[in-house]
Amino acid sequence: MSDHRKLGRELGLFDTDPLIGAGLPYWLPDGATVRHTLEEYIRAAERRAGYRHVYSPVLGKRELYELSGHWQHYSDDMFPPMDLGAEQVVLRPSLCPHHAVIYRSRGHSYRELPLRVAELGGMYRSELSGVLGGLTRVRAIQLNDAHIFCTLDQVAEEAGAALEMIRRAYGALGITPARYRLSLPGPGGKYVAGEGMWRRSAALLTDVLDRSGLSYEAVEGEAAFYGPKIDVQVADGAGRESTLSTVQVDFHQPERFDLHYIGPDGARHRPVMVHRSIIGSVERALAQLIEEHGGAFPAWLAPTQLVVLPISESELAGAQELVRRCGERGLRAKLTAPDHGTLPARVRASRLVPYQAVLGPRELANGHVSLRLRDGRRLAPLPADEALTRIESLVRAHTTDLWDAA
Ligand SMILES: [Zn+2]
Image 1: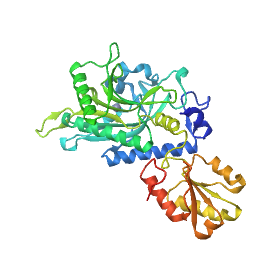
Image 2 (image 1 turned 180 degrees about the horizontal axis):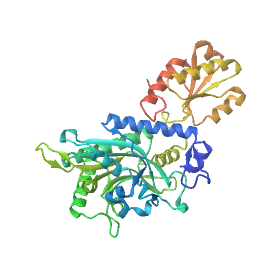
Image 3 (image 1 turned 180 degrees about the vertical axis):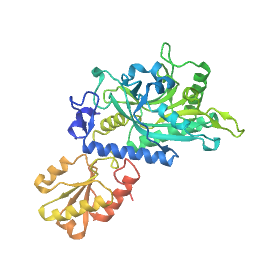
Image 4 (image 1 turned 60 degrees about the horizontal axis):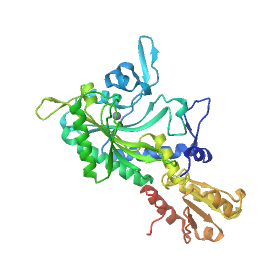
């Protein structure tokens, strides 16, 4: 596995500048393309699973975080508050409080549950500059987050479905989890009180893990301050583990925000909040993707999916036309003209691009292309439209396969 910081710079994906500040990376066009594609994949998966998306501001009043408990239990990781006249606002350390307020803003019947609220939103962590590096420790985080408000009876199914979404996403992204972890509170940590609540959430998550058939380890001292969680751990090139995805069961926030729904009996009941993230922070997910694939992203995610290589200047116009047709189909294609070097040199320079379409006089005359795949396979010439249709369907299927046997 390669170092994502080095590769990210070499491939023109992201960078940092001391003038912007440590832990505040910016995205270059190719990196932004990958990020946008990843975010859209997640949103589409969430829409299919019945989530509704919201937007909420990255700032909130200090009182919001006092109510949620972040102020008391999490302030070491928060930026200092900003004084605005008589009030103080803070850069949010999580999206949960905003989503709890959004839930509370409307009355809810049991018929609406489970209510799944999702957002890809910004949050901030006051990391010390000594520990910052690349995309894995950053101060500005784009979080793939969601909160499911549901009845106690629905928790296991919702948490199980979230775990299944995580497994499916890892398949599409080609990410291999290092292990599944049941993260429990440990001695001496900053946790909210309520022994019965902790026991109930831990029992629910254990049940979800046992039913999923995944092997996991229970580890003390890794829980969130408000509840235990399932963490999906990944390893970087140096073997260091970090958490990418989580599923959490929370009885605490619904209590603090006095959330309720009207049950079939006409009375007020307390919902449970399931917090879940499929890919965690977009920054960390991309660091993992860059390292696992060494920059050779799955075709659906690659910044350039197809490079067109005309053999000589005579095929240049035909090559431009092919790039245009790719664009019409929503495929990301680019042309590398003969003035960029010999054909073998241009093939080598495009080694991370999933598909290379070589265009010579014979291909041009027949309306064909000769495809080379990134893994070294060379396909017999085939009609250009057929080649593009097959690439398009592979991209739409979000597969890590470069070609199918059809
Ligand atoms: Zn949350």
